[in-house]
Structure formats: structure tokens, C-alpha cells
Image (tube, rainbow, N blue to C red; front, side, top):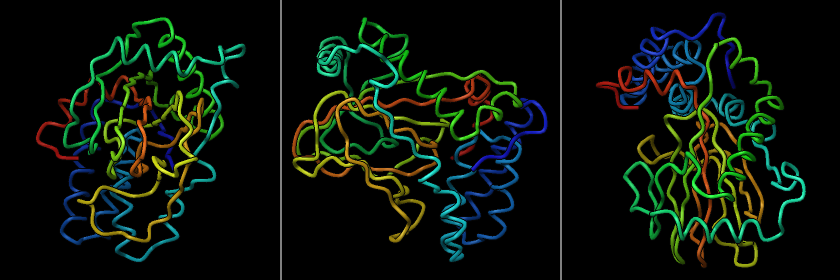
Length: 280
């Protein structure tokens, strides 16, 4: 779901879109769903990269019983792509994922998660870029190539071109211990997200599945949102819009994954000013 801007994205568009999205979120929380949708749709029209402007449409439609609109927003068949890293990098060393995990654990510092990243019994790194380590550099190149392919396949490349923005990449690693999980969340300051599974095959224990669909609890109780369950496998990269809520089910073994976000540089430069006093 995206609107192609008729002109280049300006700083004023970012400021106004954040204000509209903040207003729309507040109206959803106050039960003014129809009015909220007006603000949220206008925000997304002004700034197609503003993820909360789409995410907050989901509870508005849900509580208006407009489930067909939700299915359009959560178009899993069109907007979720599962790509094997081997199809991006030819001649990849068979033990690449295992060696990369070792490199991460040896070189990177893992921190306790913040409230925005509801990890239970797990930790995450800060941004892994610029890449430090040969294997991580290889992964960075692969993820960039995956995002380029994704934008072309889902017809979003022209959205970037017409908006006149450059795209920035950030990556981090998550490590969840046995019994751990990640609660429902979405990536508020990103546009397109991805997750890469370097090693373990979780299918044998039916744990640690990625579930697309569940939105953060503060958006309200939405038990029958459409969901997509994805079984992690070594070398798999899953790509989806950042407004997709998602969670990781409880795992019975150590689970390492590398997440990535793609966002416009304009969003990075202007976000702090635009987001001042806002809570998206």
C-alpha cells in the first residue's frame, strides 16, 4: 500500500505528515475512527515513507469492522517476499551463516532491549553499520541487493525516484535464549524491514516462528487480524513493509537473527525536528 508523491518530498511534507499522523493516532485512541482515517490517509499521501500513518489505519479499520480494508493493507501475498541469500550471492561458503554468527558474538556487544523492542529473555546490538568484519560486509551487500529487488518486485522503486530521496540502511542482531520471545511491535521509523536467519533451523521444535500481523497491544485488542506464520530457515531473508506488526513466538533453543531497516535519508535528517512533541 503506497501513494506515489506528485512532487519531491519536502521538509514541510515531513513536518505536516507527522502532525497529521499524531492527530490520527490520538483520534484512534479516542474512538474517533472515521476522522482518524482522514488524517492518517492525508499524512501517508504527503509522505509515503511515514510508517505510523499506515500502521494506525489498521486499528481504525478494525474497530469500524472494515476487514476488507485491512486485507488490502496487510497484503501478504504481494508485499511479503522470502528470499534465499544463496540466490543473491553466488558461490557463498556453505558455513557462511554459522561463521557470521560467530563473528557477531565475538565482535559485537549485545544490550538489554528497550520498551519499543519487547524482547523477553533476549538481547540486541546497536546498529551494525558501518560493517566491521568481512562476513558482515558480505551480508550488508546482500541485504542491499535484496531491498533493491524487493522495491522493484512490489512496484515501489518509482515511489523513491519521484520523492527524490536517498535510502539509508541500518542493521542489528537479536539473540534470544531458550524460552525467549519478542512481543508484537512494528518499526515506527523505518519504511521497509527485513530479517535474516544465519543458522539454526527452528522447524524441528516448532518454536521461534515469525508471525506477521499482530500489532502492539497499545493499539487495542484485535484478536482476529489476518496473520502469516513464517518458519525460519538457514539463509532465509524475509522482507515486508515496516508497518506490518510482527512478533516472534517462544523458542526452545537459542535463536539468532539479523534485522534490517530501509528508510529515506530525508527521514533521518528531519525526523528529530518533525517528531518533537509527537508520539508515534
